[in-house]
Amino acid sequence: MTTALASKLHSCWQAFNKRASRAYVAGDELASAVRVCHQFAREGVSNTIAYWNSDHDAPRFVADTYLSALSVLADERLNSYLSIKAPALGLSNELVIELAEQGRRLNLGLHFDALGPEVADRTFELIAAARQQTPKVGCTLPGRWQRSLTDAEQAIQLGLRVRVVKGQWADPQQPELDPRAGFMAVIERLAGRAQHVAVATHDPFLACEAVQLLRASGTPCEIELLYGLPRKALLKVARALNVPVRLYVPYGEAWLPYRLSQVRRNPRVLWWVMRDALQTS
Picture 1 (cartoon, rainbow, N blue to C red):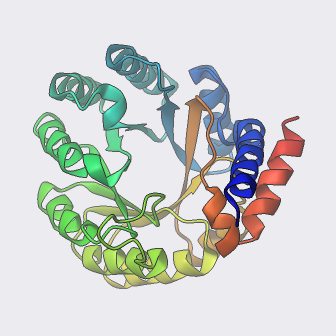
Picture 2 (spheres, rainbow, N blue to C red):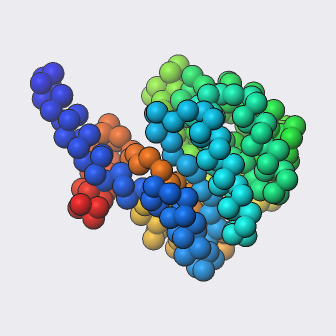
């Protein structure tokens, strides 16, 4: 592929991204996310909400946004917890402790999303600091990272709730690591030992395999889905296995949960992006 063609494809993808990504956030404001959560709560689906910040948001602004979200969740009495991004807080120990203390006062969980592998060590330091303030802390382990097996051990020792994902960012040391195999390797490491595991995938076969393994080991688990992605097949799996479902509901800055490189591996992604771009136009 020529450089010019690659640049043109990238530009086209960015245009689709900007339009289609609006399908993956409940709206710009917290109130929109809360409305979505109540809608799905009536169907028996619990939730986690997440503020997706812009690159221009200061860490203090993000922390205040998270604090407001915790207060609203407490008032709304939803079966919910707050998902946060440590880099958006400037990887600040002080801001994380402030959030953890608020979570403890309101009896609400705080869950750390996984971002790039370059911030994983610092994120786990912050997770450990938060865990000293409140028992309701969770972490996310990507199947694409070899380090997730070691991180799973730390999560078990800290008594964390764990969300297992395939992951967006490749392992810099092992970029060809199969995310599906890695996902199941993490599930196997957690089975029978973790406090609780969220099986966060839209792959119905992978979800079924993971839930069955966790259930056989006596590990409490649920299926977690991202708002905006197709969920019909996963809801069928959840009903068949009688496992709870949780919906990750973002608000704020929109971005796509998949990349151009994924189209080559899974052509359905292109259909989803085109569909979403048309629906939000």
